[in-house]
Length: 194
Ligand code: GDP
Image (cartoon, rainbow, N blue to C red; front, side, top):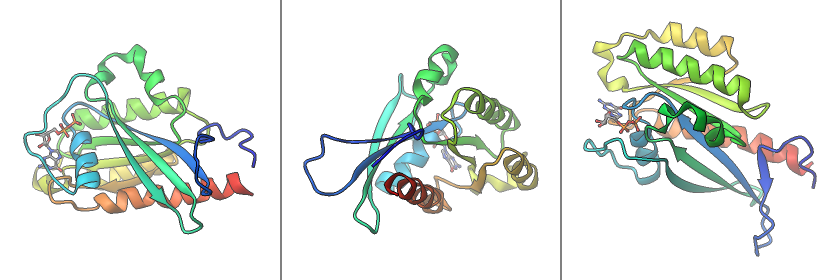
């Protein structure tokens, strides 16, 4: 099979199984404190840890997904854990990412501006055809909302992104967020296999 042009997903030739093993790198970007670690933990472990704090360096979580045709896709979920401050390192972090989750906190307009900065960065330096989702997290705090769903939706549409509001605390829309990716990857994998 050919991966011509689609360097965002690479074949894993070390696989000893018959299944087609494809890797996909998925990055999370956004201001410190918007809930990136909590979103990943909520998805991977089904837990919300309110003591979650910013760790030094990037943390890494891997999630394997078996598609219906027995293709295995590995999501490499990276979380910058604050390293986004080191702007010069950022392109190393999202290089080769097939997908990006850009997170802001719906109670923080600053974090929404920062999300827009990351979207521009990804448009400039990310993989061509990268799948991007704009995520407004902390939906449980909607009484203190300061970024309207409508504004975010419009911004997402203009930039060819999906948009979803989540709460890592209550688990609202967390599975839906990652299902969006599963669906997108099924398409990418199909393109690779035909
Ligand atoms: P990160 O720096 O983006 O990885 O953010 P963290 O995942 O470390 O979360 C930062 C803080 O926000 C922590 O105190 C979390 O408990 C809190 N937090 C994360 N997600 C939510 C959420 O959906 N709702 C609420 N209310 N708090 C959240």
